[in-house]
Length: 188
Image (cartoon, rainbow, N blue to C red):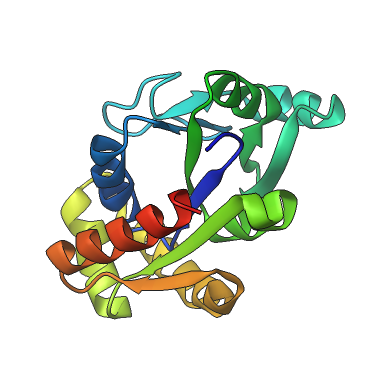
């Protein structure tokens, strides 16, 4: 089981974090990889729980020191990445890593880990549903929501680069599908 990774990626608002949290409840041998970011915390987010928060300058310094498995500058000055130390920490416990990352990060992680990885692209049934979900979160400004919705259209073009595309139009169905594909991967 050691040195396996499961990658969930999606445009914002597709439900990937909800699905990842569901999978984590079912699999005690899996551990969430906390991503690093240079953006500010949203809502109740805490450093070391949802993300490792750094300034853009700190993030750039860590890039120059080769501390990331992968990273992206998702928006100007807004970095996200996977710390090598996070991967090593989880694997040292003989746990399977589960990632909840943006689409480009998911593609990069799949390239990096190859056959050790299962990559799943989660998508909302429509752009309008995606917009509705982002609005109902109540964590972003209307401008930020529109920026995310516009970005989602571009991110959808990455779906074929993933091992599996999961359309989240019904949460219970999405849970069942995700359980099946994760269980099959872990049993290999």
